Image (cartoon, rainbow, N blue to C red):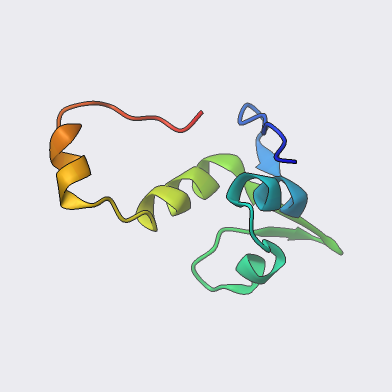
Length: 76
């Protein structure tokens, strides 16, 4: 069951990322281009940098982009 993520938090957990993306998130934390903050054995992901990373890695088909041209679409 997918849980809602509180994007008002400054940092997300690996579990938050897993619930949001519905995929294994731990592997993402080892990518060089994925924003992580390691505090001892804890892994935290800065929320705003995560949202930027998602936007950067989202492919939008041309027809969908044209259909919503000029709209500000925000992740909630």
